[in-house]
Image 1 (tube, rainbow, N blue to C red):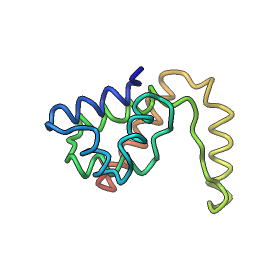
Image 2: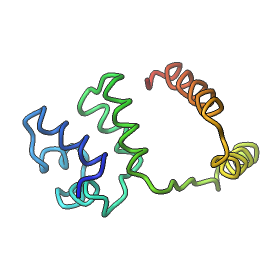
Image 3: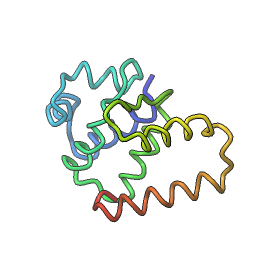
Image 4: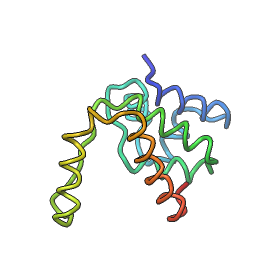
Length: 124
């Protein structure tokens, strides 16, 4: 069964007249690995987000759709904290503890801050 991410990736390929093997080549993986990601059997590597945006010249609307598809598909997120400054680690842990009780206004405020940062770095 295709995940939301799988649906996005398949549509992206179809719109560009590509098959699974074509996209897999752009991502540097096998077609079977890409298929497993689409079907929720494997997690999408984090570097794919940037690779997809670059390889397919995704506009801001499609970047948002990709981000939403990733969010709908992910069951958990792993953060590597070992090489981060202490303040960043503390923030990550605090955020994780409070995450489930954030109200919609708080979520929107955090998203606004992070999206502004993406635009300032040229990612958005």
